[in-house]
Length: 165
Image (cartoon, rainbow, N blue to C red; front, side, top):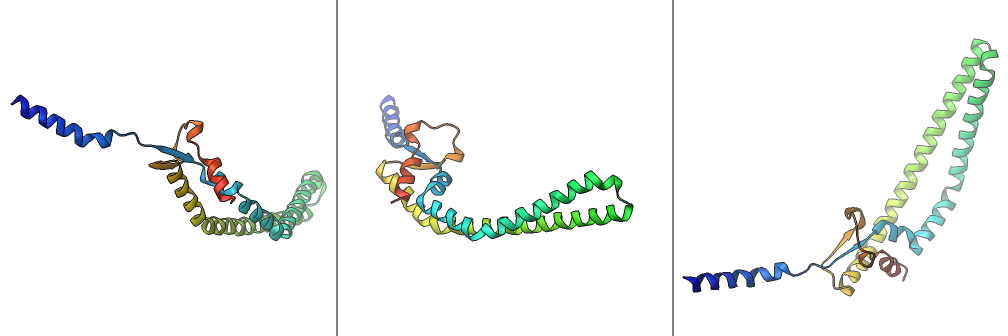
């Protein structure tokens, strides 16, 4: 009976040995690596050039609204009711125009950034897979899912280097 228990215990240990092997894990900050890459810098410059006029228009409308508000606060008490209402209506229109332009700009920029991320995804995935193989890892986690990582397990600089090739 003792012999059977010993053999069962040995068989159990042999089967569980691979599960006890150490899992090798690395961590990367995908967003940081992607948006620090040379491609992202070039994309950012293009984005700034493409939307410089729109940003200037948003700032101009914002400044117009600010001036109307200041005038309303400063001179509103001395104005008659109809002048004050007219100025308040002008101010409200400028605020609406600003909000519309700002929302449209933000939405367009967000769409362009998302398109950039989607275009870059295959390259990022390939670079992550290279890191996995080169460092003989079993798993690479995104940094957002990790509370703490030893600096030598943070592979973000290596990923950035691969993306800049």
